Length: 430
Image (cartoon, rainbow, N blue to C red; front, side):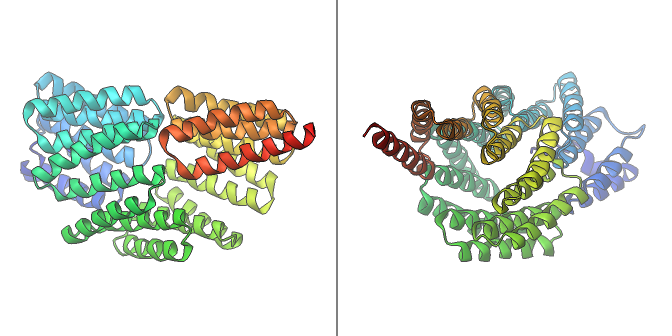
């Protein structure tokens, strides 16, 4: 998110005191308290440009709380005021942050338009840091769309600018984003290298929150590599830092990651314990997006335990929240997971219905990996129905997309399922 403080640090004491307290509370992740202090800055002496900046900062707090409608409303206020004052810096910030709202909702083309508008303004103004930030945001959208080569191109452009202007924080973010692409591509050693570079920078500049996030990312890579003990070690390091700096959102994410590792280890009760701790924190801090993720994770663990009715309760709660938030990406994941439950229960028509709903969303928002995942799962439903030709048709469609985006783990899994079905067909013909 872009920040725009236009004159607030130099405001009269009666405004500046509230502003300074708000910024301090925001750094402590106390977003609701920060909103109250930012709102106290609206006084008769507050200038129009300061009011616009306050709307942007309040919008950032609401976005951190996953309250997207409130955030968007304040970004719109900031945008309108910036246009009226012809303040291009504020306009670029408001447009870019609105783009983040649309990305969360899964409206990727609309998000792309806003980030491109923001980037063009920054380019015209010669604001290199803002330009690099928007290049990174555009890269993230193409990553979500599954266009990994295009995403990589944008992140590399961002990194080039950040390195030229000596923006170490930006460089670390760019390296992390490039690493994330290589995780999807299955190039885990390359991903690890980029994330270790990002970690080193964040440690050098003393950005503890980002250091913790980076340690967590490295943990995820080791998880994908199958080195669960090393993954656990990195997540525990990240958890310690997040607790030390009282970053409750980060703490919850690391607890969830640790829960995922214990789930992979099939220590399901321990996994459940960590996911429940994560869910409690997300609820305590009002992070609705995190709450949906936590509920979904718990649902998946109950699915593995074979407690399918309990799993369905949690996954349905996760779906309700994602639908309320307009988080279409999360909605598709929830629908797919619910479809998997019905598949296990033998309710094949219901399973197919949910998987097709998930596929429709992923296709509409251009999320290639999600689209391929749902095609794969639909193939498995047809396999259970005994329609092996249709199962093969869907699995081959999935494989084609996985190969296009270079998702190596999913490619191997899909090939195994195709081979298994072809062997069954061969036996039945014999």
